[in-house]
Amino acid sequence: MPPEKVEKIIYHVLVASVAVALITAAVGLTLLYTTSPEAWKEAKYEGASPAIIAELIAKRDPRGILGLTAPTLIAGVLASIIAVIVHSAKNKDKTLLAISIILLTLLVTSTLVGLAVKNLSK
Image (cartoon, rainbow, N blue to C red):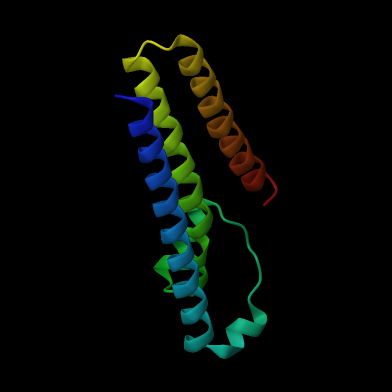
């Protein structure tokens, strides 16, 4: 796969993730404001752990939809890194492969540590 093709894939994945995140945020904010204007005034940040997001969505709380915005953006970045890993493995670019794997490991580790700390603070 030529580098230009990988760059286009990364570009499209990132643009798509930003577009989906913006749509998710717009839908969540609209639902939050239109379903209960009182909740709009009282809405507070409770964190964005998967359990909290799932609980809010199960309760049909619009804040659950808003909570999907950040994971959507993170998923786009992770998908881009994975595309680079696949590309560098196919082209036997060991330096880029190593850097990409280290970056992916750092992102996943920091996310897991953040979730663990959030769960411990409850």
